[in-house]
Length: 599
Ligand code: M6R
Image (cartoon, rainbow, N blue to C red; front, side):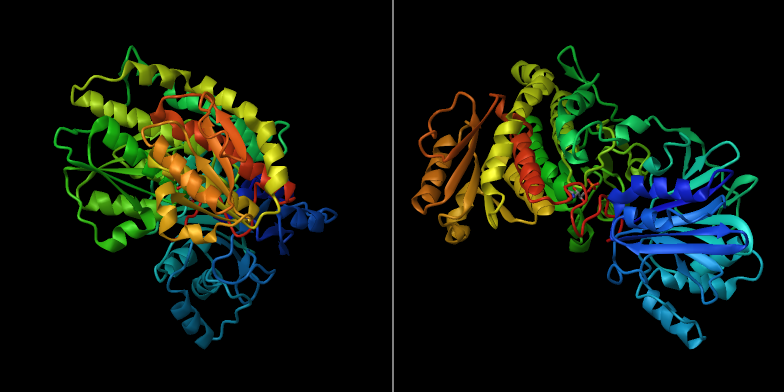
């Protein structure tokens, strides 16, 4: 959610900032801007739309400076416009600020600042930071930033540049920032891909850390002015992992990576009929599991409930992370709280985790991004090792999360001395190959998309474990194609939503063979009788509904507990191809950002 990059070193800042912004675009792409300290003056440019607009605008500008900051925005306060684009400035254009997060008391601060004579150019909350820093600035940027932030409530990943000092000041509070350490150059960014072309040595800033970056390197202190010591860590990612490698979109590349990413989740964790997870917790008094997550990760959580209750026989509650702490949940030290997050930075998920910890629960996180905030606050974790997910629509993270939840369920069963199902373990080991086979449906799904991309509505129906897959299929479609789509438990449809069904309504059924197959067939009949067009995802050897469905998508036969993973693949492909047929920007759908670091 908003991308930030700052640079101070010996290379051309313009090139590094633009390159970094392009890598960060998945975090927000409403507008972009930069400010470069050029020969004692600020060179400023801002453009509405993707970074390429900004790039074209500055292409012929000779800016030889080696210090600057830049930002790509996901609008919270104020519509996408050049005025609202970052950087923001003080009244005299001497202090430039790029900000990620939300200043909750900005209205009150703005009123005071206006009464003191400050003039605002934007509708954003972020601009108050520039004016507050101006208010306290005499001759030292970090002192002014510290004094300003003492008045601020909210979240910020913040980088400030003053025309009077060749230095950057960066501060983190609930919004990620990293320092990239190079030779004779220092970077600051909201996310690692921005700097990966230049250095793999990074420092993850903690909340309240303030970094002063100048020609000598960097100095770290906290907002109380005390020196802090943070480790420089080597990032394991490489540049290749954040490139499209011949695929038209990152989303398609990530869909096709799933055999590998599932294999990464399993690697070393299923051995000799046993599950090996490094969970360093005392679970002997465990009575209940609470899972909290958002979006696609919440769909994984719902599947996790089925898996954990079925395999480990432990009661599970699933919460939207954004609702959890506001419903005054009752949590105790016999609860295990599981946070699921691809990014590990989702503000609501973090807040739920903190609430559960505060009430004494032990905590585990299922996270993809190594070193993210969730991983640093949780008691124990299961990394997905799925590699960077750049497409805003989550795909490989979803199937990796479900795989991790199966491992967790099996691990908890094993912990209480119950035998594991050898058949399930064998299928689990085969899962990467099964998913690879499922991907060969790509052309069929592209053909189907060609027939349906003009449709205005879609329904997705499933039962049991596959009900959350229906939700996920609908989410994928709506977020990248802007087609209205809803997911329901198949039997629930007759309690209202069936009123929507007519001959124009495509209905995707997850009709994998299981204990509820007869009931699913009845549900299909109900839709068929109302003229709905049935697209059924079925097992390869399942012919019962061939005559009922208008379109059959045959997936490999797999243990029913693994069916959500296999069934998700055609739904991802269908959504992808529909959005592509519509000519939409699949990787950067409107109004969205990859990680939602504000509440
Ligand atoms: O990084 P997280 O898994 O915490 O993100 C949660 C959601 O924001 C995310 O899954 C979102 O719903 C995706 N756009 C879904 O494709």
